[in-house]
Image (tube, rainbow, N blue to C red; front, top):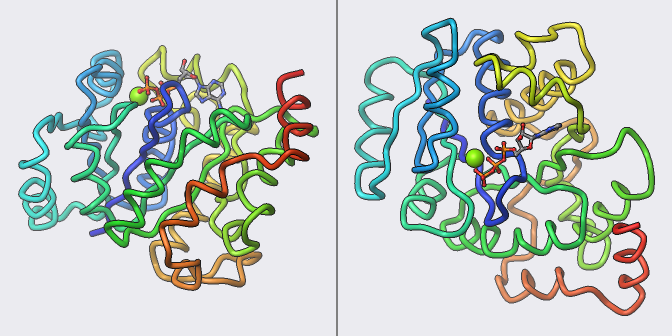
Length: 251
Ligand SMILES: Nc1ncnc2c1ncn2[C@@H]1O[C@H](COP(=O)(O)OP(=O)(O)OP(=O)(O)O)[C@@H](O)[C@H]1O
Ligand SMILES: [Mg+2]
């Protein structure tokens, strides 16, 4: 069984939306999936309440101390993939979820402020030696904003970091919001749409990473990333020339 956690301090970055999207993409790819909700806000439970189908089951686990036992029992019951949705901010439950996950996905909108807000999650993933990847979400269809965010993520410190930016980026489209409102995932709501294609592509990227593979354009393994956590906060501090990028992002 593999376990993925969606985590980042910033609210509204797409943790719950991507958890649901990836869950349905994985089910379509043949997995037995369970969603764990550690966010008392209850986005996944509310979604399940609107949902016309039973699967995937959503299990609320709000206590950090219960997460390891829950994962062990799901493993014994034949579940092949657990996806944990966490609350914004930091909490003991989020820390435990990151600790026991095989992969921490860190969604971020393509703005400097959002990317900066990922630092504490990144530090947690590093502290627990949990592999991680950024997912750029709610991106424009094309344009400077995304490449600027990728620059902030990767270019200033290390090309290695760019190897943990998941592909493809997930574009901002109404399909995501409309699907969730109906208790569906985007690949159920508009299966032949571009959003569905992107989410299926993201699942393939994630599955490759979970299986220890190197994605086609990812020549470097996570283990080759700089080991020192000290490097993490500094890479998010914009250098003067980056302030120009920041201005561009907000325009
Ligand atoms: N790619 C996208 N395109 C359009 N809307 C999106 C996309 N991703 C997320 N959204 C919308 O953005 C809002 C926030 O998304 P979501 O609830 O998934 O974020 P979150 O990180 O789980 O937030 P929180 O920290 O409050 O739990 C929702 O209304 C969701 O439908
Ligand atoms: Mg959420």
